[in-house]
Image (cartoon, rainbow, N blue to C red; front, side, top):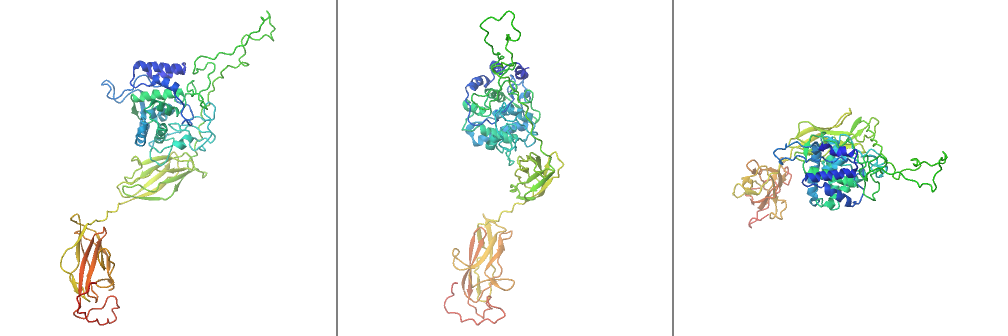
Length: 619
């Protein structure tokens, strides 16, 4: 009986009576944290916030929560842990969206103190928790949730601002989605709550986060009652709306539980009824009011039935037998004397937007192949354009991107599929795809749900992460033997070095060997003295194709000398900047030196000059 309390009373009682009874009942129950009683007084004193209401004062559900407190786990050993009143159940995806929005806002605006139960209360009143949780895996409503046309007839008068992109109406705006944003407000406050790259008012994650941002605007602290009241009135400027939302807010704070998507309880008749039963009066001075005037036989905000107007009787008594034509009736005809308050006008049910034309083809946009390194994000987004059989763009089509193949790549939320609604341009863009640790190719397939249109496939390739470059912090010769050779000959002992890193052999370290002048800091390649010899017999003095083996060792090829005696320097440098200088000594030749490598070997070299009697020069 308690669960049906609010609905049954609404059939014959005025809104004021309903509120008074609820206040009395909740006060009598001494429910913890109850705000309904003080809410009446707050609503009467609340001031209207600036700006256009989020919903354009569209109709809302007026059903009040049951009077019994929802069961909360651990409150009594006699209470079941999972069950509770049906009205306390919140569909799983919708509940997740509210809690995620609370966490996101807490991270960026902790001073707002947004409770998820407030989002749940507004979601209950605006759309019955997305029509009982009728959403897909991505949180998008299975069918559009649209308010009536805001054409000034019983509602605010808001001309079209989105060319029908969100509400399918190019004449006037309508409130859209589970949190009932009008398009102009969504243009400012829209959010991407599920990281799919779109701001969709039909998606509960996007809409819940946008509602949270809006409620926290103007530096509000929602733990302060005045800020809380102003935030709620920013949604719909109605005292009854504030009372209703606060009733559900209090109810959810005292307990709730998760129910499967699609199984949530819809309030009342299942349609917003604030404009059909005398509730929903706006705050004074707000244009586009939401309450039609009360009329004969209709429950009004003030209660009772209007009294028809009266006329002043004649100053002299009427004749005993009055003429039938001129004698005025004792009761004025209702046609010529309308009631003081015009009868209520019942808004026509909202005209649903035209169904989108079926998709006949999907046009792949951008590259057909995307690449990423394992563990990283794909930089290219997958996009398709939906087209009708006439070749026009298909607006509002549901496009599902699905990962096909042996891969651990995923969309946000570890999902293998993601559904996106095409915009006014007919384009659907998949959320950012993340590569896993498994390398190789797989397919991402775009399909127009509910149609026979051919799918559009993308190829995704995950590359292995390049191995980190080997590192070294020391480079030493493996022998301390002096390196000496005669001019015109070669060094008998090879040059071998070992690279290490933190005392361990550094394998695979790239090493460059250069015959240089000067010291390590200012040296340049030497133009004379020791040299390496290529396969073609030509001399060169810089060698780059060196790499340490598994033991960190690298041996240089044979080093030759020209006819110039002296002391020379060989510089060895690793890729990470470790330098080793090796000294090479070339003595004067005791015999005629071999051909200078810089000359043509086919010609006879000139005779060397007699060696100087001075000491060996330093090159």
